[in-house]
Length: 150
Image (tube, rainbow, N blue to C red; front, side, top):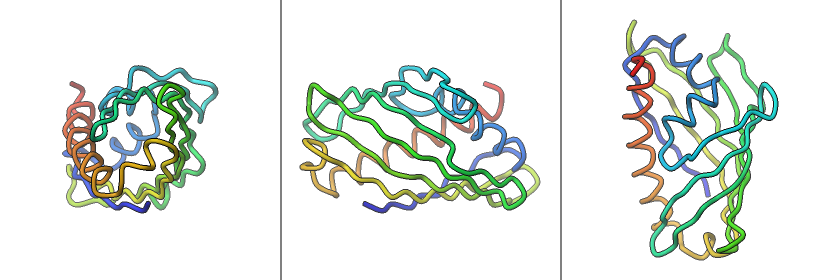
């Protein structure tokens, strides 16, 4: 399933870039993440609790920076995880592009291509998109706080 979402962060583009490239800080801002452990400079493992429709999931998985280009303000992340109890999982990529709106405002354009398998894959795109919208809204608010040092 492909999804595109844009958020605006009230911070300079360089600050937003540094924040987004620090996955431990991103984890603090992302709803449901219970902690990330660094495997190396570009890879983390962790868990995320999320309720999608009638299904509560505890997804254990990894996220990795696949590519980063600060000159063009673009990055690519890979993610993979699953919930053994429920028998569902997710894997995909997330492309990020940072656009400067003003000196102190940055748009983060997010484009994802995600595959949902098992029980999660049975929920349907409408339910998943609704949950994704909710998570992105909360993430944007948390990211703005994190960028502001709060």
